[in-house]
Length: 492
Image 1 (tube, one colour):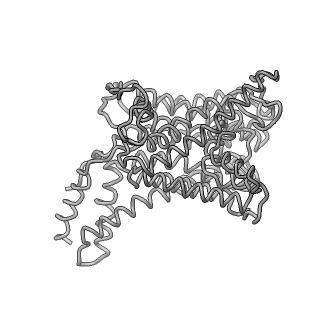
Image 2: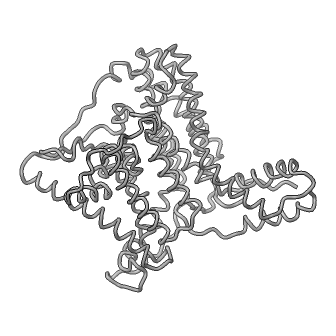
Image 3: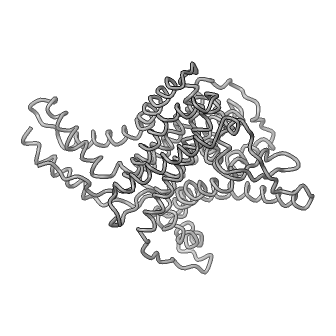
């Protein structure tokens, strides 16, 4: 055992000294907070409590039962309708073109992810930028989904994919979409950002999507199995713009109060709760899995326990490293279930306080969408600096998408100046706090609908308030941890 200590210590030092590759989730710069960190926590917690009191006092059961007002943005005149149809057509063709470009450049372009547009186009523009566009402009992806467009084109060739050939197992619910989501985050965190690997993944996903639509029907598969459709549907519930039926004639585009659409969406299957919780947990795990705090938990706490159980013979460094890799991956897989445990405990307490006989899983489904604002702001605070730093490279990459030395446009690589870390930190604090305030409001409205009276609704939400305060404090704490640097001193 003692002989292994120097080797394990050296291995730990080498592991921490390995330079990290540029990825879509790492951003670090030193910044000294202008006030003690605990003041941020107290301030945010106090704001949430005050918001809870204000919402509980002014929002009654009648408001929870009312419908929200909408305003039509798209006139029904022939000219406007024709312009809208042309816009939708351009978006659909453009989405397929972007998918084709991403796959093609990854397969035949340079292997350098910084010089190949595929990685930036998919990870930054689509997964990050388009998420924030959806939060503002609504679920545009519903009618600009490139995989749905491809299936529509296949249908025009005479292959009917609308009718299911096999009945979809109801018990699966959204598990296929969740499995794809976990695979996607696994690739982001643990696979090198290689353009070729991304292209193979997209080709495989496209094949599975076509097969899923062929067997289960387009409507069913795109509701339960198509990852991006489920993800952008959830983000779209936060948007102030809705598209009631994109295929209707005349087409409708409506303005609505932001966030309230979540109150009128009932998850059709309880597995959507896990999907929403993974939206939360994956971002949190992404932020923490490279900190010394998480790394040292394995090397300094778990590994010595395993070594003591192993016996007199010490673990070889390679075995310890393999277990470390498994530890990192297991943390991601288990994260939504850890969140689910806390979520169910809070709802169980709320159920007891409200003295309701509603099944716990029914309540879990009813309140799931109240967590989407938190997931959205966590996503924004964790990734938006990446969008800011990567946007200047989009035009140069578009000028040479394959990395072959082309110069299609007269563009030069823009230099990125230093970012204002104070502005970034305070923006992150405001976003996290705003997301939790919205979540408190949505949860209160959902409680009034679930439990009926204002008294039951307010009392039942006290455990949820505790959960929101906990989420806020954990979120700010994670944001305050620089990545890939020591957070605690190694033990002696």
